[in-house]
Image (cartoon, rainbow, N blue to C red; front, side, top):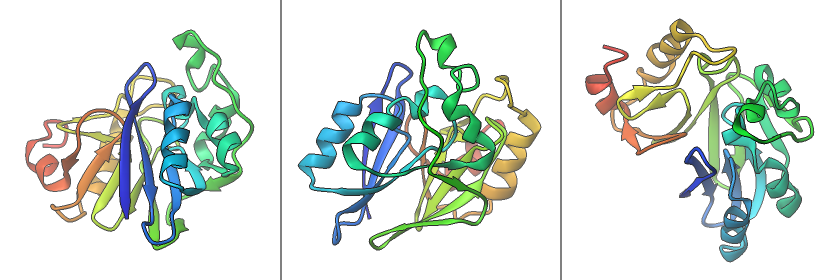
Length: 206
């Protein structure tokens, strides 16, 4: 599994292109902007994108969904509890960011326990609500894509519509902290970290 990270959009969202080196099958996680840069990398690496995956429905994670879909033909996947955010600029908060981020409805709805497979890569879906009702994290062997649930020595906001601080902390403690200390955490914003580091140093879960 290869991972290419790029910072996209006005809120510096981490977008990840994850792919199988042998088959060139790929998925794009959280295309929150900079569609041209994302699609240029896909073309340059001759990747066959099979999925566009949103870890949640906020505009800074979905803004480039449609442009990437038009370029690749890949379906859009999101947790069922956040699906309505894709078609509503009010619910995805883009109206408050000076824009209107909407796209068609999701092509596939995700839930806890689902597996997204492409080439030799498998992403296990962990439902980690709290930042949004349908927030997810994606576990791929030694790597966790945590969306806006867990950050380096921080956690996602829970003061936005649909957020819940108690639910967010429960998601982290119950779903993420049981994972192995060595697992790399690739969050929706900011630098990467590890489960072990967060277990010891994250002030929100001590």
